[in-house]
Image (tube, rainbow over all chains, first blue to last red; front, side, top):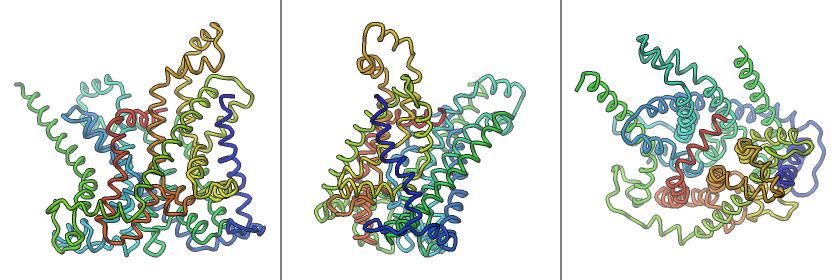
Length: 278
Length: 277
């Protein structure tokens, strides 16, 4: 009886849609009016759709850049702020703060800072005598500006999780290493990083899943442009479903996205288990 | 003072310098946002730029506030966030208790099913969820935004993990004293759950206040927008005039920044706990 409200909500708004999305993916429908059953046509169309493959490649590129960067920066910040220093709590809070700011606001700030003509990034480059970067009119710079925003947002979370894990490493291990005359670098490589492996693994899993869902900052900052050079799987699904109103097609992309995330999760879970038993 | 002591103090200073530099870099976008919000369009377009505003210009805050239904957007966001928090917390506390402490058929299977939706992106189920909202006649309404997002596994998962730690003996003692399930829940379990409730309230409020993709789908009439959808609307209205955009964006962040300042410890602990499990 205590579980009833949760079960009801999940049944109606999650489990049923998960079944129905597969059903809709075999239809041609605008969302209103009559839907037509077209079999696997949507999936065949997707396989031949260059924008879908671009979106998949972009999502993979974004993930490959963003996840390691957030991980590395988060670890560096955690190592630094794990040591005693004045105003440590305040500095930690500052590093975490962007995580509570909405994706829309973050994207608006970044869109302004990376504005090609008036943005501060290009103005500072100009002061240094460098040419401005085409953050809005070229694909790769646009992608890099998105990755920069993802670092700003994700740094704090990675740092906090690493900090919690660092506090779990027994002090005696470090003292023993110091007695043996191990350098800072040796300690980091042979004690700290191996001890943090489960945490790193967790953060990689979360990071990849989050990166595959990146929507707000892309939609507001670049809108997938220039061209389709920052179109992601989820922004493409949104635009086909709710701008072009091909909801069967969008559902088929959704099903594929779900399968991709599922495969990634299973692979990661397998790796994690193999490592635990090894 | 020993040599080791001097060495240690120098190391602390060096680390502090690095950390402060990082903090300044993280804060700079916010600072720049404030400077921009206080600048005139001419200043922003000028060939010279300054790292601080010449004079505080409040026009960016006043103009859009009166030209667009900004106060209505604040109200919509607040109504959605508060009702979502209330419903989510109640549902998750009850379910967390049931999945952690009660026995009923299919409990573990159900929990696994719920857990497996943790990593389902909104965009996977957005089309059928949209159809549900249309069928229920909730398109364009606050309820259309709130209801589908109640099916979120994170809070339920956290509640269950937390309640697993409540000792069984405590519950059994209450039962022996003749207290029913509901009484036990309210008198014994809930008082122990204050830290859990704090984390659930804070995170749900943040997610619903900051949410963008789903309200964008459900809300069509500008009067019904939330702040986040409204900001996108303003972006399309103002184009390159970032002064007004930064000002309105800043105002929309204030509630979250206050919540963060007050409950910073809960944020960090909640995140860390979800990380360690």
